[in-house]
Amino acid sequence: MLSVSQILDKSVFQKDDLIYLLNSSGSERLKLFENAREVKSTFVGKKVFFRGLIEYSNYCKKNCYYCGIRAGNSRYARYRMTDAEVLEAVNYAFKNDYASIVIQSGEQTNKAFVSKIESLLKRIHRQTDGKIHVTLSLGEQSEDTYHRWLEAGAHRYLLRIEVSNPSLYLKLHPNNLSHDYHRRLDALKTLRKVGYQVGTGVMIGLPFQSVSDLADDLIFFREFDIDMAGMGPYIEHADTPLYKYRDSLMPLKSRFDLSLKMVAILRIMMKNINIAATTAMQTIDPQGREKALMVGANVIMPNLTPVKYRQDYLLYENKPCLDEEAEECKSCLEARIHIAGDTIGYGEWGDSKHFSQMSLKDSAEIPAALKK
Image 1 (spheres, rainbow, N blue to C red):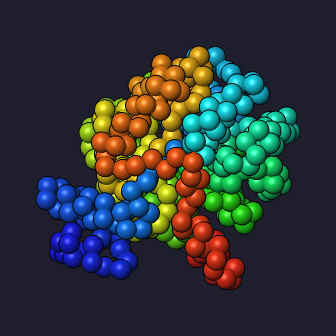
Image 2: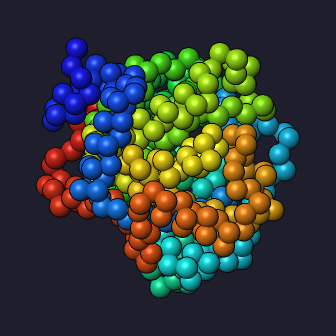
Image 3: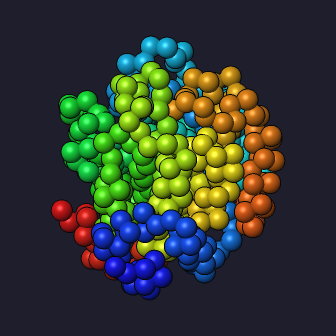
C-alpha cells in the first residue's frame, strides 16, 4: 500500500488513491492538508474572494428529502424579498467592494419567477455599472432561461449534484421527473453549453453514503471539469424525511473532518478552480470556515439577506449567523480570513482561473463528461 506522500506524487489520482486519502489520519492527514495549502498558494494565491449571499426566496417546488425548505415542509413562513431589499443588499456589497454576489433561492420555474430574476439582473447591472459579478443558484431551468439570465448579467451558476451516485440520488429524492438524476446532469451540461462558469458540489456524511461514494464524487468533479465547487457536511433537519436516520449517521466531527479532506483533495486534483468555505463547516466547528481556507478553499459568502428572513431559510439546523447584520458578518469573516493567513480580494471578481484558461482552449476540447 502506498503512503499519502507517494499518492500525492502522482499526476492523476485513481479511485483507490482517493479512498486512501479520505481515510487518512494522524501525520498522513496532516501531510494531505499541508500539500493542499501549498497547491492553493501556488495556483490561486492567498486571496479569498467575497460573494455576498442573497437568499432571495424560500419558495421551492421540490421535495428533496434532506432540505429544510422542501415544498412539503409547512412549518416555514414562505417569503420572497422585494426588489428594493435585493437592490439594497447589492448596494451594500458594491459600497464595500465585494465585487461579487450570489442570488440563491428555492427552485421555481414559472414565467413570473424567470422574468423577475431577469429584471433584477438588469437592474443590478445598471445600478453597479456592471462592476458586480453575479452568481446564480436557482436550480434546474430551461436552456432558454439560462440564456436569458446570462444575457441579463449573470456570470456564474452553482447547481449542486449533491451526490454523483445515481442509486444514492434516488434514496435522497422523490422518484419522479422533477427530481430525476439525469435531468440534473443535463442541466449542468446545458449551463456549460450556454457559457457560464459552472459550479457544483456534494453533501458529506449523508445516510447510506460511503467513502467510496465520496471518491466517485471527486472523480465526477474532475471528469465534468467544473470551475467552482461548494461542498460541506450533511447536517440533518428535523422537518425532513431523512431525519429518521439520524442515529445511524457518522458523528458530526467525522463529517466535518471528511469535508476538510474533500476540500483538500479537490484542491490538489483541480488546482485552479474556486472552492467555497461553506457555512455548514462553521455549524459543526466554530472555526470551520477558516479551517477550510487553510486546506484549500478560497471563497467565502457573507450573508446579506435581511435578518428577518433568515430563520425561514434553514436548509439544515443550527445554521450560524442568523442574527448578524451585514456589517457584523463582514467584520467576523475578515477576522476569520486573517486568522487563516489569507487576505481579502476586495474589489476583485475572483473569477475561476480554471474557467479563464478553459476559455482560451480550442472549443473542440470538450470535457469527457459532456460527451456522454
